[in-house]
Length: 178
Length: 374
Image 1: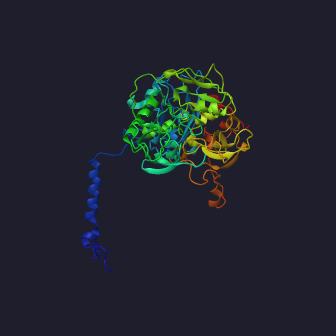
Image 2 (image 1 turned 90 degrees about the vertical axis):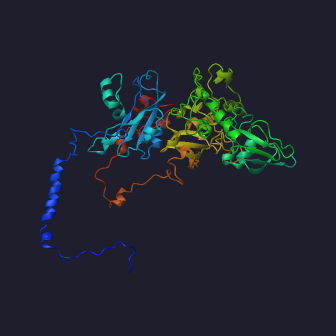
Image 3 (image 1 turned 90 degrees about the horizontal axis):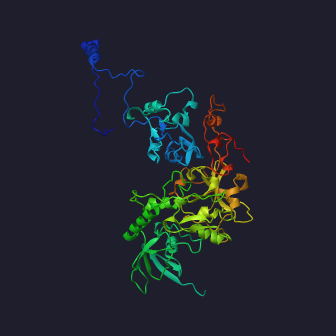
C-alpha cells in the first residue's frame, strides 16, 4: 500500500550494545533530574494550613447581598433562575407587610431562595443577570459533604451577615474588599 | 354597502389591498411581522382607542395616487386611514425610528422601571417597546411622579406610577360594563387613574382591564407576586361559563392554576371567539376558578419564540405529560439504595403549600402554614 504521508519511519530493531544493556547511564541521568529538584522551589501547598490565593475573577459559593441598612436586596425577580443554565436556582416570592421595611428593601422579597449546589456549574450568569446587586459569587468553595442533602443551600446559608447587627461577621464575609 | 372598494397601500415596500376605511396600522398588521408599528394605546377591540401614545408614528411618503405629495409630518398610523396608492414607511424611515426612540424616552420618563417587582414583566408591551426602540441611558434628572395609593378592591391592584395613561382601561369599562366607576382624574403631571372617592371596581367584566393594560399598572391581585410568568405553563382551557365565553389561558405551575387570563393574539390583544366576538372573560372565570378541575384543558398554548415565556416550553406536548420513573426498568427491577426526594430537603415548592389557592399575595407566614387544597 502506498503511504499517505512521508512521516512513516522504519523501526530500529538493532540489538542494544553492552553499555546500553547495563542501563547505567540512563539511571544516572534520571537520578540527576531527581537530585536537581531538591534545590528547586516547592510548588506544593500544604492545604488546610496554607491557602492558595484566588484569582479576582474566581467564581465560588454564592452570597445573597444586603444593602447598607442590612435589608435584603433580593426581590425574587427570577432573572437569576431564568439565566441559570443548570436550573439550580428556585425561589418563592412574598409581599412585604408593614413592619418588615427594615428587613427587605423592596415591596416584594424572596421568602424562599434555594440554590442546588449539585446542579450549579458556577458560571456566574446569575450574578450577571441580577438587576438588584443581590447575588454574588464569592471566593470560597462549596464545602464537601457526605450526603446530597447538604448541598441544597437555603437563604440561611446564602445570606451575608447583617452589617448592622453582626458587623464582625459581615466584615469577615466581605473579606479583603471590605 | 354595495361593493367593497379596495385600496392599494404599500408599507415598507410590501403592497397589500385593504378595504377603504382601514387604518394604516391595521393594513400593516395584515402584512405582519416587523412591518406592523408597535401600539401602546390603540386596541382594535376597543372603539375610540388610539392616538394617545404616539408609538405607532409612521412616515407617509406618498399620500395617494391622486395626490402623491408626502404628508408633512409623521402620522399616527392607528388613526390615519389608508388612501389608494399610499406609500408608508415604518422601520425603513430614519425619521420614524428616531421619533419612536423619542416617544419611548418620554414614556419612560415617569415609569419607575421596577420590572423586577412588577408582575407584568415578561409580557409587558413597554418592556418590548423599550427593548426594541429605547436607549439604554436616561437624560431625566428629576424626581419621578408619585401618587397616593388607591385601593381598587380585592381583585385588581393599581400601581399608578407605572401607568402610561393609554386610556384603554377607561374604554374597557365604558364598553363592557354598564357603569364606569374609574377614570382619569386631574390633568398634566397629576393625571391619574382612580375612582372618585375610593370605590372598588366590582363589575363582573371589569377584570378585563388587567388584560388590556399594556404595562403593569393594573395587575391581578390573586396572582400578585405568586410567580414570574416565564416560569408558568400557559395552557388553553375552557369552561362552560354562563356569563362569558369561558375560553381562557391558564397559567399553571405543575397542576396548580396560578392565574387565568383571556387568550391573547400576536399583537397582545384579546383573541376572538369562534363566533367573531372578542373573547372577554368574566371575573368569576378570572379570579375564582383556580382549581384545575374547574377547567377543560385543551393543550399547551403556542408562545412566540421571541418571548421569554417560551423558555423551557418546548415544541409539541412536552410538559403536558408526566415523565415516568425509569429507574427500575433500567436497573433490572432493583430499587435504588439511596434516593433523595427533593421535597425532604427543599423549602421551595412544598407539596403541601398551594399558592394558587390563596387570594392575594403570600406573606412571610404563608410558608409556615399549610394551605390545603380547597
